[in-house]
Image 1 (cartoon, rainbow, N blue to C red):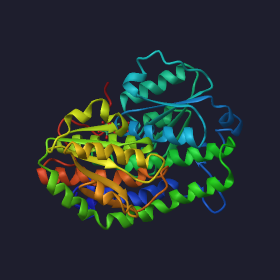
Image 2 (cartoon, helix red, strand yellow):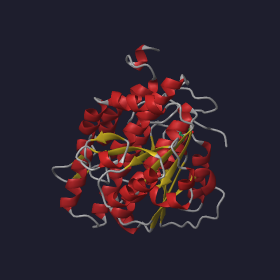
Image 3 (cartoon, rainbow, N blue to C red):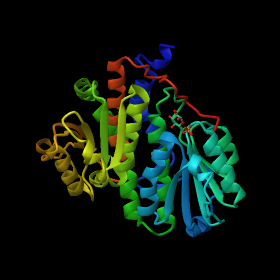
Length: 371
Ligand code: G6P
């Protein structure tokens, strides 16, 4: 078993470090930034340009970490492809009176392709006459067989119960898909398409660069491992990343954590902030940068300890937060692939320090095949 871990102490750590490669495996052969071309073999013949142009809306349905990658991709389908997009939790979606018709595309996301609620949501969508597309990691899984179209993430087997590389694989696949459709729907110019493809192309290198300093996250973990609660803040496309960071820490270190949209903090969580509350905030450059800066200033003024995940080039952030985890600069639309990495590592190191079972956390299963 040790051999399968390639010398890493846990599968989760191995899978975190694999991400530069697995992200590349997901986009390799599918994107050509110089030519501005996207080529998704599995759906090439099936997803006709005419159909893509006429999609009226998208419903994305998933559970757990896959739900979070769905939330990220909502921004991509809206901002790039200009398609109205909703995201729902599979166990909710299947019992609602969702309004669906043939022009609705239902996208289900599942690493395992076996999650019972997601499979049921897929079947419901099909029964309503919707077109269905699955984003799966496991080839030949139930969901990948039953969906009309499937796009594989090519991440290789994910063993750690807490999902890491599957998340970045899903975001990568959906990013490529949203860009392809954006171009086909004439919502993006070729120049923009090339630019965004290039941003993705450069991500593996940037993650590799960041991972060389993984120990700096370990040092922060040492300071905060004994805390009882964490608050994770993000906005816009990094709001789902805040949710994912909080989920990771709950799953493997059993510390209570909440992910929140930073602008919503004043409507509740701000009441919880005191000196014992670490606040992990994603504050990378982008359209909401100034906004989230003022959110962390509010939190700091109430005694909270701010751990910021920020761009390397950010000269100001050091004065506004207590700790900074610097990441290489990325375009905001591709940034979740970068910003999630330190959050995965923070959860990993805290779990390690607390002596928890990193790869097999209590009460959780890798794939939930019952309702
Ligand atoms: C379980 C796993 C999570 C995963 C979720 C959805 O809860 O522990 O890591 O995100 O199921 O699984 P799926 O295979 O459908 O992505």
